[in-house]
Image (cartoon, rainbow, N blue to C red; front, side, top):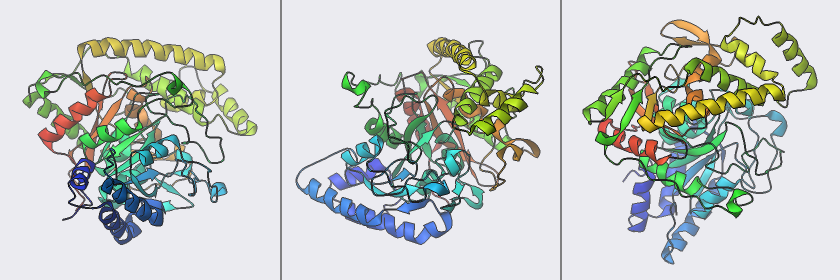
Length: 483
C-alpha cells in the first residue's frame, strides 16, 4: 500500500490496528524525499537518522500499550522553529551555523504527541516573502509547476505536504504565510485565532526564545485534509506554560453547526483595492455553489461587513510598522524622509506601507484603537453569519520572481500588473482583527494549478471554519496529488 499520501488520521488508525509500523511509514517518507526532493527542494534541513530512531521508539511505545494523538506519524517543521541540534537560520546567511539549545514549544508538543520529525522546510529570507527561496537553501518549487513558487513563508511545508513528504507540517502566518502556500500547492492550512497557540521558540535566530505576545503573527497547522488540521490544532493549541498556562486551561467551543444546511455564510469575491483574478473568482464561486446546493444560507452582501479598504490600510500599517522595527537608525531616518514627502491625498497601499514603517507609538495606538472598532464590527457580523468565504490571494501560484527589491515586483492579474504586496489585502482581512481562517482547496485553474479559498470564522471559534472545511471537502473534494 502507498502510505505517503494517506491522511494522518488514516495513518493513526492503521498504526493502532497494527497494519503498519512507524518505521515503515518513516522509511517510505524518507525514500520519497530522497527520490523527489532534488527537484522540489522543500526539505532544507533533513533529520533522517533521528527520525528513524524516533520511529523505532514510537513502535516500541505502541508495543507497550501507549497511544498518543500523533504517535508514529511522520511530520515536517518550518525552518523558522527552533529544534535542538538543527540550524535555525530564517534563510539569513549570517546565521548559517546558528544552533538553538532547545526545541520551540510547538516542536515539544509535536514530540510529546508522538510525531516523528523528518526535518525542517524551506522559507524566504527573514520570512519576508510570498515565495520560499534564500541564499543558504535555494528555491522551493511548486510541485504542480516547477517554474512557479510554492508560496511563502511556509512554502516548504506546503510543497512537502503536496509531494508526500510527511502527513502534517507546522508553519506560521502574519501575511498569509500558512494560507497562501496552501492555496498555491492545493493543501489545507489553518491560521488560528491570534494568541490561541503558543509561539515561543518561533523566533529569529540568536533571539532569546521568550514567551512574547506577538501582534498579528500566529503559528498553525498544515495538512492534506480538513480533519487532520483539527487533529494537529488540538496538539498545538493552548497557552504557553510559562505565562497564561500557569492559570488557564484551553477549552475551545464546539463548531456552531454540524450540518452544511445550518451554516449562514457570507461570500466575498471583490476587494475595493485589487481585482480578483478569474481563476480565483471561479474557485470562490465553486465553493459558493456547493454551499447553496448543500442548503446553507448564502449571502453576497451585508452592511455589517467592516470597511475593506480601511481594513487593508490598517493591516498594511500594522504589518509594516512591525517588520522594520529592527532596521538600522540610518535606514529608518531615510524612510522618515520619504514618508514626510508623501502627499496627504495619497491613500494608496504603497503610501500606507511607507507611513506604517515610520509609525510613532502614538500612531500605532491610534491604529490599534481603530482595529478594536473593526473587531467589534466583526462580532456583530458573526452574530448574523457563521463564516466568510473569500480569496486568499488574487491569483494561483505565480512564476518565480527573485527581484531583490520587493517593492519593484509586480503581480499579474489577468494580464494587468499590480504592486506585488497589494495581494496581501485578502490575507489581512482575517489577520488584522486576529480571526481564525482555514485555507481549503477549491479546484484548479485552466492551467491546472491549484486554487484555494479561505473560510474566516469568529474569534476563538476555530472549530467552526474547520468543521465547514470538512463539510466542503466531502462536497467538492479536497487534496489531489500533483500529476
